[in-house]
Image (cartoon, rainbow, N blue to C red; front, top):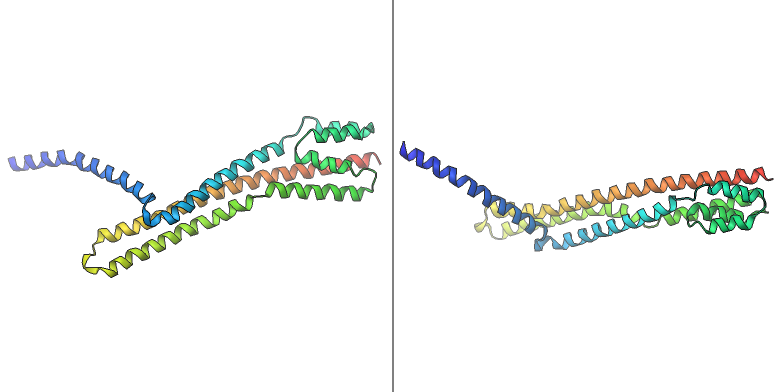
Length: 233
């Protein structure tokens, strides 16, 4: 009975110590997994792609934020200037607003006096140029979203091949711990690749959505401007 009580007490005291040691090993293992030498050739490009995706997302977000801002009563002021024949004032107002809508209207104002079809063509061409500027660099986010998971999976496959090669080269010293260590070290690249891919995909979809909003605004301004010209014909 006494032996059982002593064994139970020793077990109770050992459990917290073992748990604490396991936690320390786990924390250390995560750090070593990410910065393991045999996976750095994959992890470094993934970190670089993640950094570039964040930079590109913030940059495009700022550009689109400026593009979507428009002076209050901008089109109403343009309408008043055109009705009063003050084209120079209308052009000056457009130059004072640094956004795609203003540049689009300015292009149309510069063609006043020509046939309406020519004006519409000029405005639409300017709109296509502005959309091209907004979409510049967005394809890079889609590329990162597609490549990052594949690159991570490549690192895992290469790591597993290396683990099994080491096992085959020295079967006498093989143990399950060595094999499992090689496999989960290799699989960390897949996890990292998926994380980078998901982040880049979310960034890409958010930017595309904001570009669609700006494109819709440009289409509305084009219609309003052409209707305004028809009123003055």
